[in-house]
Length: 141
Image 1 (tube, one colour):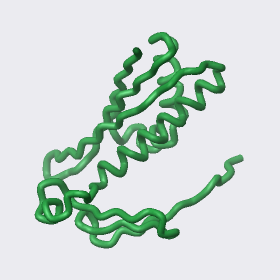
Image 2 (image 1 turned 60 degrees about the horizontal axis):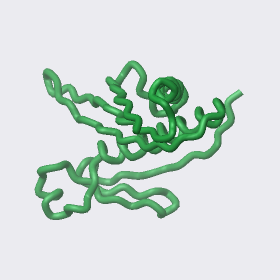
Image 3 (image 1 turned 135 degrees about the horizontal axis):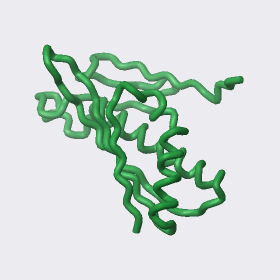
C-alpha cells in the first residue's frame, strides 16, 4: 500500500527564461539558461539542471542516511550532483548525472555498499532509472 507523504506544486512562467513560484509562496526562483542575455542580466538566476541537481543531491543523501540508520551504521556524508544537459542528433535533448558521494567515519567497502542500497531507495534514482545515465563516484576520508 502506497501512502502519499506530501505533494508540492511549482508553476513556471516563461520556461527556461522565466520564473518558478511554489504554490505556498516559499520558493521563488528566476530561471535563465547559462550564456543567455537573461543570465547575464540576472546572474543570480538558476537553471533547471541546477534545480534538479539540488533536489537529487538532497534526496540521495537522505536515502543514504536512511540506509545507514536501517543498517545501524553511523557516518557523515554529502552528495554533489553534477547534471549535464546533452544534445544529440536532430536536437534530441537528454540529461546525464554524476553523483559524487563522500563519506567520513566509515570504511570504503561498507560505504560503497550503503551507497548502492541508497541508489535503490532514492525516489529520484528510481524515477530516472533507464532514462538518464547516472554515474556514481564514491569518496571516503
